[in-house]
Length: 425
Image (cartoon, rainbow, N blue to C red; front, side, top):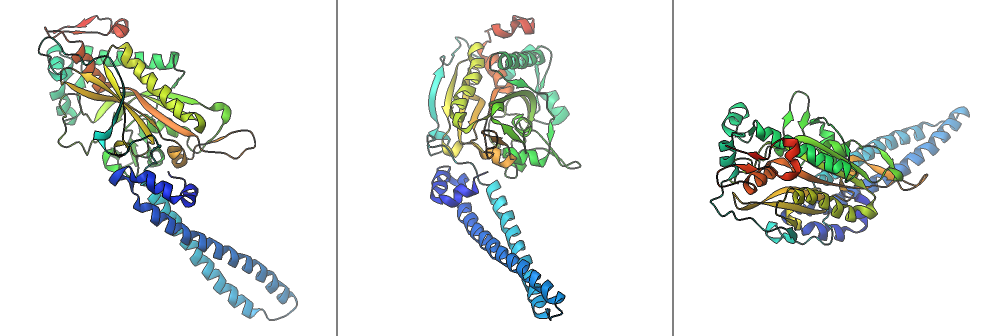
């Protein structure tokens, strides 16, 4: 959530920063918020003055009554004052509510280094390896999966509908091996603490990380209980510290978890949905950090490098792209996408988004830290990144390590976990 005090002090900075997001910037909300804030502050000032007057007159009324004097005029005046105070309190409450609603649907401010524009303006930062071109006609992963007997799309559709693939046999074991290995790397080498989390969360939790209210149509909800299926482990991991005041010694906080993720993908009509390219349920290893504001920019570089480590050790070619403002996620101030090369579909596929949310999520979730004992609490910065999302990682592995006979070599780093060197038809 945006800082109302900062918005009040320098509205032009907010207008300019939001405008680079394009149509999604909700710049028009700024003027309405400022207008409501003026109404709210004027009402508070008048109400405070009337309350002080009421307290003063109440003492006078008491004195008059004790002295046997007539206080009826003052009593009538105070009734009018009380009615006016009630009106002003209602005005303040209504203004607060509308301000809150507007801020909840207004995105974060992009950091200065974020370029304006849309997806076509995303900037290539670096790459690792060269896009592989097989010397034979490479197969897409859905053909490989069917031939190998590890991917069953028809039965997944029969059970749950399209977008719910089934991995079987060695396919399920491949995914499990990747998850276990990735978690171990992040625990042993990158200093994260692992959590096993609820997959259903409250509306307050989704609001805290920015998915609600704006993206309700993208999520799955249980009507009876009012709980929501998580779109990413970012939601429960970040909300573990909601409404808490941290000590400076606790920072940085590094949390990780592997969870299923559930997404309606309501805006995906017309996009390529074959195989594992776009699904409604998938596994993902997530990294979440809570950092001192002075360190969050460096922390994003560290987090991104941690995700890159996974791709490098798997021997997969990838590139790092800095998103332009119009392509940023709602809560993000700066995002690096990691895109892996999949030679079967001949496409770069996003397998991770690593984002710095500055204090935007912390304000929404009321996460604070005390810089030093006795000092006023401040908002930390939150970050998160996928390290990595499984469906497209599986796509890249199958299509990269395939042979002309339809077999697929297992990447060396997970062979011991798999107990196999190669998948064969």
